[in-house]
Length: 287
Image (tube, rainbow, N blue to C red; front, side, top):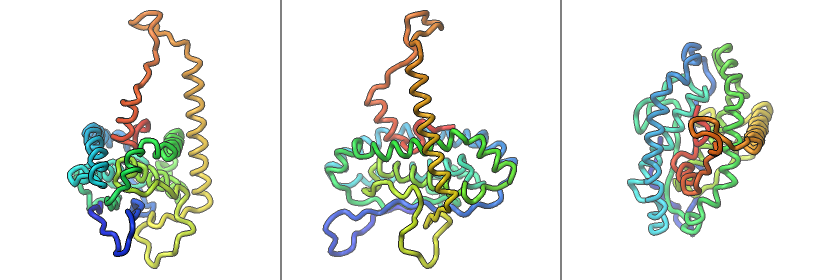
């Protein structure tokens, strides 16, 4: 992970935006036994990410107030949240079968194949104040994309297990979803002022002489873009199906509480907001 203060060029009149970048090597051979047991092997990592996300709640709250006063995140909060996003992204990349290497139990993870580049800096105080509102459209997009991917994750797992590698179109679509989710996390946690974008890759950008990795720039084929659309549609279908099932529930619990006790607990806005800010990348999508 690369992080640190980004110095704006001379003559700049306001905060400059750096869109967080994700570096992942291209699809390569994967050991079938690690694919077979992937999520089982990652259970210790899921526990670590959960603990880090719990600690990220107070860090995000302190960071929000600090950013309103200072116009940027306080340094200790910035370091923690940046490390948290990078750690979570490395675990998620392994869970989504993008890489075969096991994510390290290390904070910096500089030796791992998956790297996140963040350049926290100056923030617009007004955008910080309304951050929870501003991030709603991006939250919906990333939630639909991630939910759609996990809706067919068993099929994708079988494909990688049989082939021993992830096909290029599937790799591109999965990397695009992971990168967008990472950018959403960075924006929600005030690690960047750049709004999440480019879910469908980096087409239209100026060509680069030497690409940094398979995802930088991320050039999606037509098949990969079609898969991203499919994941979004599946996410919508899953959401509609869940809403229908919730509305059709008779609302009674015939368990220990006996008839008359509602099975649906309404989440408070404070709890929902805290959960999203603590781990917006993986909220609601943990295997």
